[in-house]
Image 1 (cartoon, rainbow, N blue to C red):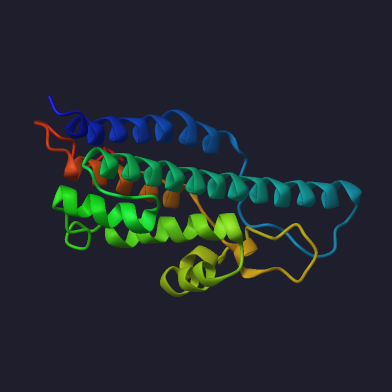
Image 2 (cartoon, rainbow, N blue to C red):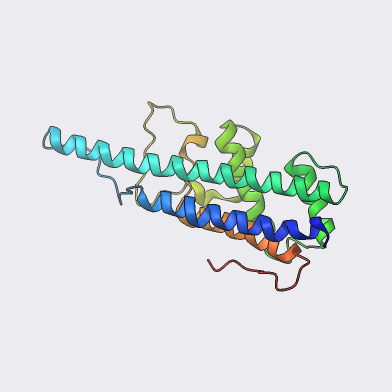
Length: 200
């Protein structure tokens, strides 16, 4: 059996285990508060409770952003490895993704994967680098990642706050990112009984 043909299934399983056994378990354990109260408090205890709630939500958001960065890095490494296994040169997402799409004969737009893959990579760049081209591009294509209608997030550092620090990644976003990676590998898997769609 061709080793390169086995890689998509292995990669899909690796992402699935990371998502289910590490990411979901960790995010589920982090306390997240609904709308955060602001304004004058009646005393020190109420003030400290409000501060703790803000820290809880900030920590959960930072964890989600870290997991988005991890998923993107894992996917990029997988893509490079699969491209190399097929004799293609690839050293970054920008070269590996097109090579793997060609190898797998996959149309990312028709398969409904293009937007989530692009968003994940931009999120990872923003998490890694902060302000810049990726942040502006991400704001243009995914403005909801900055939306906080329930006022459940505040930056803990003193103002002014860069846009990149107000990026909100929620559990549903992480699910989308893990799912699209799983779908990608399922759709390029040449072996029998490929799992096209993860069960989440």
